[in-house]
Image (tube, rainbow, N blue to C red; front, side):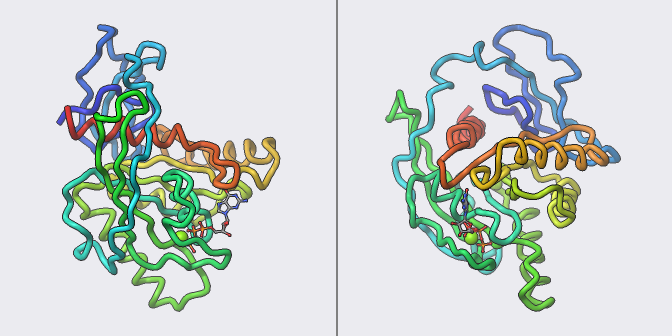
Length: 272
Ligand SMILES: Nc1nc2c(ncn2[C@@H]2O[C@H](COP(=O)(O)OP(=O)(O)OP(=O)(O)O)[C@@H](O)[C@H]2O)c(=O)[nH]1
Ligand SMILES: [Mg+2]
């Protein structure tokens, strides 16, 4: 399987995916090999790193969301819609801002239900998105965006928590069109065990992911930067390479373009 062009620095693909496209004929330096698994278990994931200035401009056009519609809420992965399009899931602790981020990305304030009280999202919620590069509306793609329930929510019964956890694990491991998972972390806090544990599980399951540090408007830049550094330092204890990370605010609408760029690049994997 060939990874998409252009490859993205800091993005790992499923194990075994190798980027063979190197338009600048630069040798692919072994330090560019990236994996997201704990050091004990290294997969064969490689890609070449190219600075953005060397990418053709067509690839740099921002993604435009043409349509975003709710499809279905499913109690488990077997009830999800047919796996006919690339899929991107958003997960994180309860109340971290998953639904708000999805609304910000899609430019639809009420697409995913948000709430000030944790535990609002309880199913696997599918949305279908039509998007196209800003400079070429005819080159559109269709993909699924998925809002998941939060993990580690203390105020539900243990059996309900176990059910959520099983539902999430099965979805992550078995959903065949799942391209990438965005793990949301609250940027107001230092590293939290449930987030590190969940990320460790993702590594074991060999699911590619990025980190999204949310609610960055709620703290000063200095605090946010320190919390992110501490989180990445905590990951370094067990991970050889760190995943890509984004900093967002649904309130101030920051971080949107970079996340959509990544999705756009991964969508191309399905068309090359
Ligand atoms: N200031 C600020 N508030 C945010 C931001 N993102 C989310 N919120 C608020 O945080 C609360 C939770 O947001 P949701 O998007 O519902 O969080 P969630 O992760 O989907 O929550 P569950 O579905 O319950 O797990 C809401 O009151 C949002 O308005 C942000 O970037 N900045
Ligand atoms: Mg939610």
